[in-house]
Image (cartoon, rainbow, N blue to C red):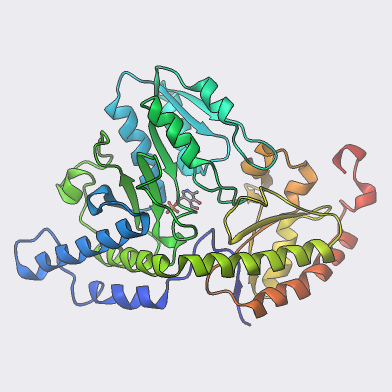
Length: 392
Ligand code: PLP
């Protein structure tokens, strides 16, 4: 059975060009880039080439890019660096809809005595600038706000927030893990001090990420040890994956405008068809300002997990707004934060596309989905009529 992979916000396929580029560094060129001999030392040049390619995608300077092991490490590093660099400041501002890489790190810091403000969002997942302004004070060490949300795709006003924070001299980090490679980002114009990205969201392998740190920003390393990455991130470089990330960024930069158009056309076709063919369906997020590859749809009166299982029988991969953890259905913190009703959260499905999806695949999903939903609704104990009124 053919797999139809529509879960690209979870992870992406390694691009064939990326795999080809990284292979020699997993096989023949296995040296340590810090070695004095040519065999190892020659890898240093490849790492610097990759750094230039990552920088080019962001319109940054190569020396502003630090390679890390993943998006989570980049996020943790950015926040930790701020609190280490400004030891007198004990306040962190973030939002309620961040990825756990930021949310749980902030929770960890609050247990260590830091004060964390979690900004609310409205029903589209948008932030109100007034809410941010109210919370900034002398004690604020850093504001960390994601560029685009992984579940609903809503894009935050990073430019506007950055300008406000720059005037007040407050460090600004954005978790751009879901945005880099999907929409153009120009750090030359964008007033952010730090920005996180992750290779496996843009067709590089898992286990490689980067942190952009604007020149002149106070920085304190998170991993402490050797002198790699100019003393900013210790640990022997993951050369093959760094080369891969460089190639993935080069590919993204080359095709980004066409891909935005291609992905939004397919996504919109999928979304509008499902809304038309399946009654009692709603879109979660901001339809006017979101990632081109993402749609999050709630199918009322059905369990998202059941939909996923049915889709799985057809080889279709997507994800749901509730994760089955320790036997209970834990509803998504993002959908709760935007006020999606209980029943709609449990029936929510995220489809996230990539350049490798075809129109035929989208047509196939449009063909099978209405009967999946209809059949599940007939079986469901949450059938519309049986639901308590307040849940409808
Ligand atoms: N931030 C966001 C918005 C994400 O979507 C993810 C991964 O899903 C991460 C951070 C973590 O990235 P990684 O899996 O590379 O640690």
